[in-house]
Image 1 (tube, rainbow, N blue to C red):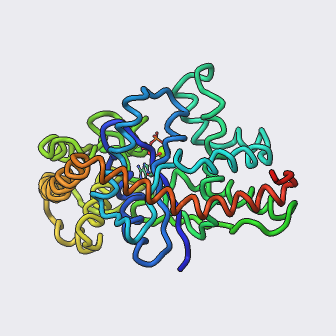
Image 2: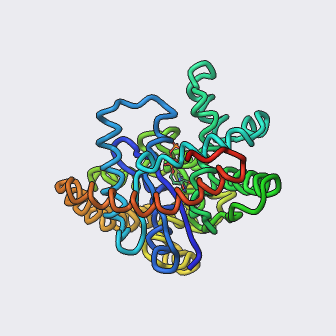
Length: 332
Ligand code: ATP
Ligand code: MG
């Protein structure tokens, strides 16, 4: 079985629709066919300021949402990044292989640091793509299921893996991105020129999965479209409508051409009303299941403890090999 690895930040409040469609949905599917490792990346979360109590709660909340979305701890390894210290350890090695200019070219860092103001951005934020490299290489992942915004980081991972292998001998698997075209980038409902994101979206353009379903329906119904009246998939000229069609198609498993046919001659309002219903049908049981997992923190924590144990077994072996190759004296 080929191996996959991916991670998600413990976001305050809730995952958003972009996280689910762009990443988590694929994680659920891939656990059937792949040796799958998924983690809540709390080390990445602290690249921006976090309140300790909230971070702890949000880490459990993220795990609960992943289980509610369909991850099955019997079929995948689900863990918290900080429970596996090898991430930080291999991260340091990777920092020492990365060029300063190379790291400076990461667009996610540029976007995020610009938003914070250059003076406030931390060194951790600067090197978080390099930590991500370590996350992936520790498990020798073959594929990394993520959204389009992560493509550059997978490219960096490949470069660094090749660099390490070239200098020190074959050590790491070169991973490939696993990015599905239709859901690679879900856009903000109010501004379909930007990706839906917890840090950049407008409140009305961001669908949080755990929000009141009524509020979600309202956001869908007030999504920005265009001045035409044709329901057609055309991301370049009709980004708003195309975004709605992509979401609708993925959540219902209906092909886009079929949807175009269904809405031929109909108004945008009809599409939005139907999509609002689809969304409510999706988020309502998701909220209930998430709450059930949160109500039983002992079970949740023991799922994560078992996951960390499985993850560590793999990570420790890879790290030991990397330490050896790089020339560290073994501790006797
Ligand atoms: P931030 O803005 O702080 O980076 P985020 O909303 O991107 O937060 P992450 O935890 O960084 O959330 O992302 C988790 C996964 O969701 C990643 O694989 C990312 O590529 C994917 N993802 C995030 N936003 C979208 C989106 N709008 N469309 C598709 N995939 C997305
Ligand atoms: Mg992100």
